[in-house]
Length: 288
Image (cartoon, rainbow, N blue to C red):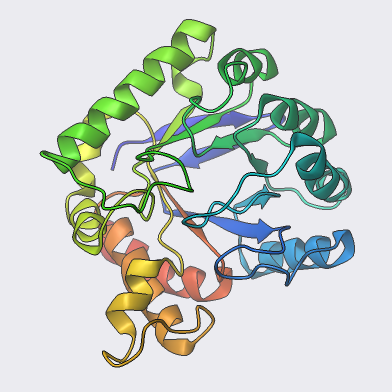
């Protein structure tokens, strides 16, 4: 796995020596997995602190659901959800805080509040100011592949050359970021598992993740509790399965192991404790 060093404010992340864990904190009423569970500042902060105690290397704070067919929320509402949480966490944790947003205004305010990474699932496409804002903030930027928008992405997604098309999309996004002034070494790439992809597409990305290394950037994979995992582990007679069920937890860990074995630098997950156990074994295998 390629080695990278990422500057996150006063902190530094070494990527590639072991697989890092990004712990998810959704401050939303409608996220597919845990919507409403942490929809208050106190509960969100408590969950974030627990994730750090469980071994999270990065926290990812989001105030807008991006589940399939979801509707966007206003910048004002998103700011009200995430800024108080980031402000409190910035004084309590010693790991980088990422803000999961597609909006430049939210990203700028979050960095001012203490976030040191911007995670843009739209890869700069939803807000014309995001590229310039990311450059001005001078923090690492995560660019993710998504076909369409959260509202449209799962409407029969098709590809002629899945890996090639996702790579070209990410290359184009990197070019936009660099042209806006984002440092090349500050960019992380995410192939966007679950975003505009069928079960077969998601499995192919996991199986061929190492093909993305020639893009020359750290790779992040977010497969935690995604629909394709739930569809694979559920009883065939069921339409879906509870995202919090043990079966989904086990299925998620299988995808974590697969991603790590193919060179993911960061895995983005809800369950940090299980993931830390999985990666302790996978990383040992990798370095043996």
